[in-house]
Image: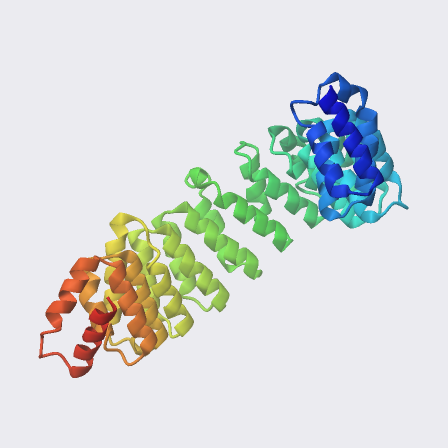
Length: 431
């Protein structure tokens, strides 16, 4: 008891001296888990609340943040004064933010009512956003109140956003009631939240939304279906998603590219290849190249090789050789390396560009295939310093001993050009 009383006295002294840092420390000690149910603490809880609220009103940003944690530990006794702060429109705006955030920590009907009322009546959008998040954090206890807000067009969007924060199946039914709302933003928010549930009612909603008039809704539906490759055959998702590759909205097209790649089948890869073979914006080209590389199938890598030779854009060449170096499936890294080596040996215009050669060297180093050693050694004689540096770095990423041994052997091969002999000598010095 003496320890508690001493801390209480020290807290009061710190408060009177406006020593806020010390006050925070004393309050934190007083409400620590070991002492929270101590009779002296219970008896002085109102007093601790008074000190904490005083600190909340006068402290800086960090101090207020610490106070909100203390308020939560003090329990439901903190709810009425927090509601009072929240309702007072003349109170400093930041203080009301902290009150809203703190109320979200209490799963209590009074806190829910206060936050819901704020959503209905207050005009401060930032404060309402904080209240929305706070209600979402409350979980299932807030679902009933939020569902009631769906009936009012003025609060429907905020209610949907709050429900989206609650990852529980109870929110599915209320969200299903607004998937055809007149406001596109509400439809989008509902579809995005529903997409996280593997519920039999959701896929049909997403399929219907593919043809929504609003691009943001179509995109949300495309993204949601992309996370259901398990339904690819059942719902014929490749066929349903393919038209969205040519949507009038570029963001929808990009989302469709990613979602189709998630299906992981050759049919999806063929659709992506066909898209790349058509006239499309460079942003979509790059997105599709990345998507084909993520698929990591023999057909998707073969399509990348074909596109490399079809395209005339340096940006496309660079992206393809870069993503080939990121292939991770052990059974495909050899194929990826062979494609890069074929490019390097070919008379393709890209092999005359220093940035492309450097990217090929980097990718070969990442793939780590020993058959790349000798081609990388030839790059050591390149006229561009960056290419030479990338080649040395790549060689060190491969079988270091094998690469070093080949370099030593070639150092005595007088049939090599003087430039290559000199490059090998320099590489050995840097090894």
